[in-house]
Image 1 (cartoon, one colour):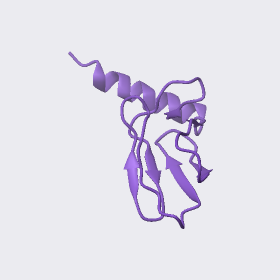
Image 2 (cartoon, one colour):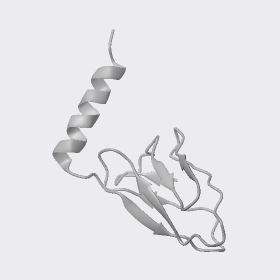
Image 3 (cartoon, helix red, strand yellow):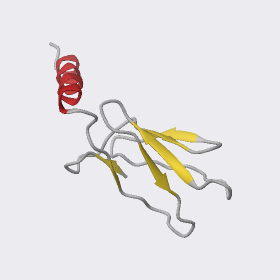
Length: 88
């Protein structure tokens, strides 16, 4: 699960491995097949700092928290999103 810095799920976040990629769903969840030679996943989403997460071979669930890239950029994007989703 990928969440923001206060615990809200982040949707449509890119999760990229060496050979495959996916995006998160509305709950911030993702599923990706990992090959034996992969050691990390790159996580990125607009308005948030990108992060690289090390893959642990015996771990099947991850809880990843992303921080806003910058407060002003985060608020600009959220303001535009609010305006787009609340049109009459």
